[in-house]
Length: 176
Image (cartoon, rainbow, N blue to C red; front, top):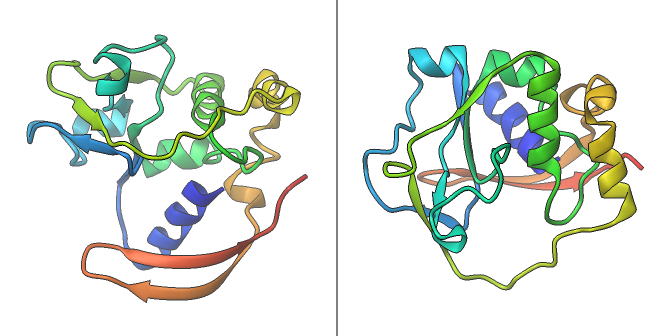
């Protein structure tokens, strides 16, 4: 839900052709990672965080698109953004991958020798293994038009413009 809010609020302020969704605990290890919008990004979604230190710089599974993802606004809108139904850690990225497949939007993993990230230490959260999470993933492509950008409900409490980012404090409406 927070990723969708960031996208919607950014679109209100800026005209952009693509977005990069970036986990805050991943620090890039080189300056060759292609964060900018390019012709390739307009055609296909690009998974950037292929080589992450906590995964020994290899993908744990081939359909992983979490961590750092570059996507055109057109593709993000076609997928109806992220699901708003995942709370806590885990599932929203896998759900988006299923949405992309359902809309025939292709994605690629960038070369792991370029896209290398250091996973910054932080208190570990237990990955949600609830039955609800698995049920949501099973029906991701069926739910995609009923749960996402088009059903996003939130209220901005405060906004604070910073040099490199804008901070929003929001009140969320939990969809279930």
